[in-house]
Image (tube, rainbow, N blue to C red):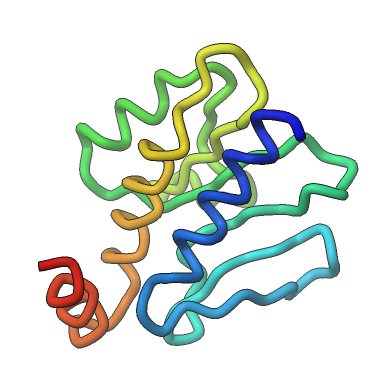
Length: 127
C-alpha cells in the first residue's frame, strides 16, 4: 500500500473518531467529506478516485494556515473556499505533511465548525 494511501486512511480514521463526525458523499463516490453538525470540516476525496489524494481543511489560525501553505503543492481550496481559510494539501509529493500533522489540521478545522459542546466532549476525552 502506498504511503499516501496509508496517510489518507489514518487521517480519515482520525476525523471519523471526533465526536459527532459523520462521513458523507454529497457529490458522488469520489467526493468523500466528513461533517459535524451538518457542516463539512474535511474534504477527503477517495482513494479509488481519478484525482490525486489530498486533504482539504479550514485553517483560521494564521500561523497554522501559513504553515500548511508551505507544503509542496498546497493551494487555497477551489470554488472560492480558499478566501475563507480552506487549504488543499496533496499527499503524494515528497515533503508532504505527515499523518500526525494532517490530523492536527483536521482537529483545527473541526474546532472551527463543531458546536462548542462537542469540542468540550473531545477535550474531556483526551484529558
